[in-house]
Image (tube, rainbow, N blue to C red; front, side, top):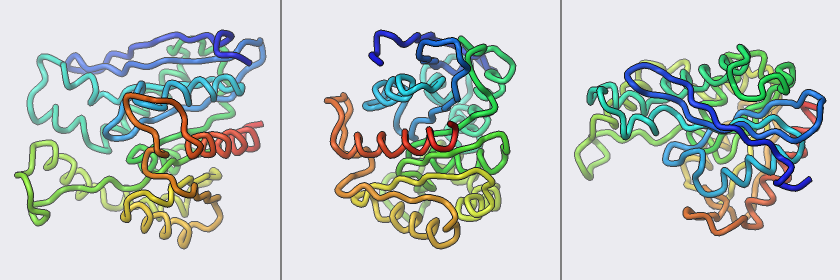
Length: 266
């Protein structure tokens, strides 16, 4: 199935204070309902960052109703009428989870493009980096999620005064305070242990040490899930932005992901 056969439609979901969630739906041809994959980009990324357009297309080509979107912090960068504190709070994990709730709710209510082609009884999440960790929390709180794929995901490093270096920004404080307020909710190992859906955790073995250690914790505390290590892969599977094409490590992650999703969602 070639890319030219996909239908791609954009959407924009208005939020408060001039913010919005901007995204795209990609679907393959055919009258049958398609299983759904919601894609969440990493903390320093966006829906068009590096490999995401290609990965979204490859998922859709493989038969999935694929949704990619920008978290509201992306729109907040250029928004008018938003105060400094609210701007900082758009960067929190809590806001990221609220954004994902908006996307899923809009799909369930038929407000996303081509929603009539989505099979909401076959729903999966794919998240990278911090969004991978956030998706663990989201899936644990949403039993309608049937499958979860995490790419190099876990808790994002939160800067503190003890770290030294530049002074903390309002965003640093907002993220830090959000983590402190939600220690129980954001306990990723516990959320993964209790997750009713089956998860596939894909981890590059050349990623930063904190994520490798957390991955070891996942394996120990939630052994019922599936774990896959991509040898020689860094945090972005050795891809760069601006994008220069897929690497063998990215292709490996995509192939394993597709096999898992087809098995779980049919």
